[in-house]
Amino acid sequence: MSPAETCSPEICELRPHTTVRLEAKIYYQNTSIVLPEGARLIGAGINRTIIIACGAPSSGRRGFILGNHSYLGHYTWQGLQAQRGDFDAAVGTPGCLHSSPSCIPPGGDCTGVMNATVEHIHVRPYSNGA
Image 1 (spheres, rainbow, N blue to C red):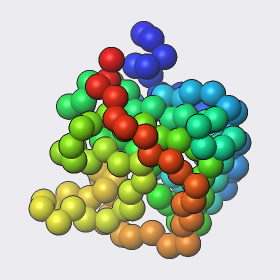
Image 2 (image 1 turned 45 degrees about the vertical axis):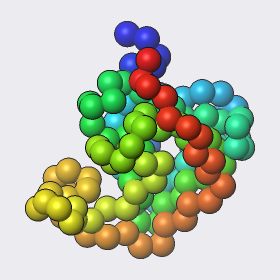
Image 3 (image 1 turned 90 degrees about the vertical axis):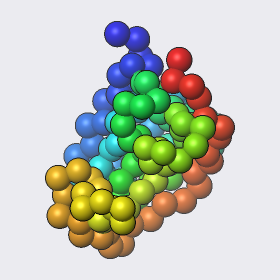
Image 4 (image 1 turned 135 degrees about the horizontal axis):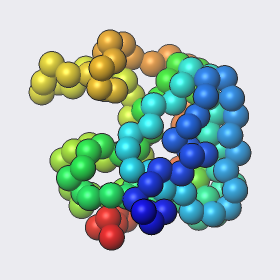
């Protein structure tokens, strides 16, 4: 399996109440990542730390879903889809989907988020997943 088909453990295995400082390199994300309570993900700067959504474009959501008391910042994110369909987004919030009875994240209780901060994230044009 190539790195573009996997999820970088630095971002996919976040733990509650921890701070992860990402290096200036490329990371891959093949799924939505729910930030645990108190988690902080801090990149080395825009266009230095790059998180790329990967996998087949129709294989589900990507991006980060904020948790209570969480923080995201200081990186560049590259989405996977050319249009808003399966909800690829750099950052999302938990809650209920308006058009269906399901929750974000799946299996969640549709509760919103409190005290979450997102800053200094650059979103660059999408990739086709190759």
